Image (cartoon, rainbow, N blue to C red; front, side, top):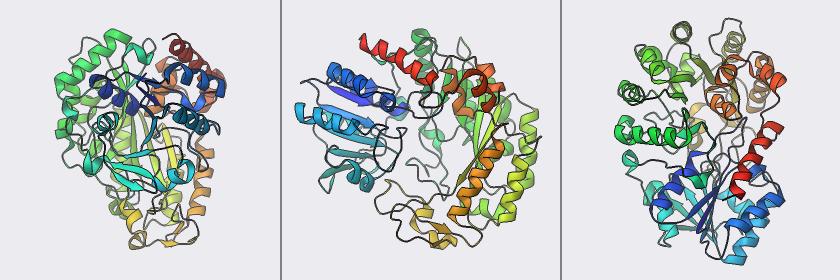
Length: 482
């Protein structure tokens, strides 16, 4: 195999990561033979050695690692300490180029953990850059002996509207498997805490796939794999009324029904309530919002300024007038929000009539700019502007903040307390629905059963659980048979 790509989604349930398969598509269309190896972080050393021996040969030019959804640990990349030495062994044996891409970390972290192993670090969407890497025509900047390629500057991909992800027999797709899909790329908003590479894109409906391309992709997946369930990987499903109508036009015109979960903004849905039935008729079964806060001053500061009253009223309306699973994340420690507001929000989230099926709480994280992350948020650039002080300057990886109301450690404590309070009535979020469905469970059961009750009745579906490892074994048997 000329190119081998390692990938995984190390979360509850299992879903393929879109990135590796999109790059595999681009490379295959350019004439290269490509093998994606999934479940990478769940492999035993014996399994990995068997796969490497099968697919990495003297004809192999590149071994790539898609890092966005891999096991994340500050001491090593992958969930296995032996993986990087194994990659290094094959690198030396066949004189491979080893490349790393994704949205997980930055040059400083990768240099610290794996300087000897990775030759090229890729920043941003690599659809175009991967061909230059394969053709050995890539250019970048030297960073302590590693080549750093910034796709947002030097290899901008302008063909997304006519692109597709083509899964092949080589990818070992399961019958009726729920798959990831990109409809558009980027987000027109730029929330102050967000460091995703595609944010601030303006009118993102201009970055949509052509309708005919998307329809062909959906039909291809149905005819070849029986796929009707999708996890939409877009940063934002409903960033415009036009995009909602576009989704409806394509999905409702198919000769079969499609179901999907996606990220969405509740304030946009509440402001344009006529898009609710449009999206549900299109096949939407779950939305994961990023409400983050119900305190207006904090919301306005980060780019989400809808009032507490209007947000709550709108969420009740959505729940009463749809069959959607609704979820949202909330961030503890946003600028200007006092502790009493946070406590009031947490009590509402924990109330019996809260319309959100899934509640996720996070302590605000402000990564360091000193190479610990590829992309930056406005909070990362100047946290002092937002009223934060650094209470632990010795921590070089993160800005350990105090915002005058609470500090990072207190926020982490609240997160832990709330996660424990929610656990018995929290359902799976919109993206977990498809991941758990891929474990072989009926979608209606997955939607209607609280996550804790589901795990108790059917067994854990966490990363290293028996259910997921059983799925991995089925996948490996297909992979060995190629």
